[in-house]
Structures are given as structure tokens and as C-alpha cells.
Length: 110
Image (tube, rainbow, N blue to C red):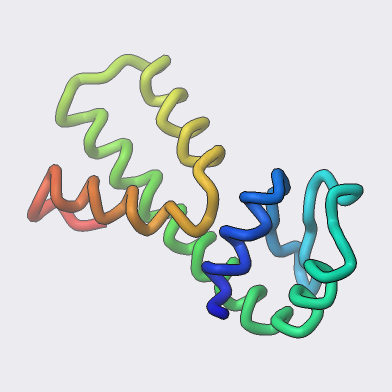
């Protein structure tokens, strides 16, 4: 099972996950079941690496979203909506959103 698959399971269980230093943080923690906890412990190094990659990708995603906003002449409110939407996008789906923005605005980099 890949780290993205595990993140998808966490999201499907109604939780979010992020890295905080050497720790994995899940919210709401009370939804964490013993089987999921065991899976997280077993895959913690790979998950931490994956979540750090997602954080780096998120910076590129925000930049691409702002370029898209520039292209469309979006308002400050629309830019804030982009930022909120990106923050709310589960980690395992952010690469899809980045690919979409890159396809929508080829040659703009991200």
C-alpha cells in the first residue's frame, strides 16, 4: 500500500493527516481505529516523506493557482477561495489539481 493509499483511507475515515516534525497528526484523533494506527506506525517513515513532498507540491500548487487567477483577472476573494480550496483538498488529490492547472495553462510552469 502506498502512502497516497493510506492518506486516502485516512480521508475516507473522516480524518485529516499532516506531518509535524517527526510526528503524524490526525484529526479528529478519536476516529483513529487500532488497525489504522498499526498501519500508520508501520508506514510512518514513508508517510512522513510523502507528506513533506505534498507540502512542497502545495507551494507549487498555490503558485499555479495564483497564476491562474492572474490569467483570469480574479478578485482577492477568488484568490482567497483558491487558497482555502487547496488547503481543503486531501493530500492524495493535490497532484491531480496541480496537473489540471498545468494543463489549463501550459508553459506557465508550477
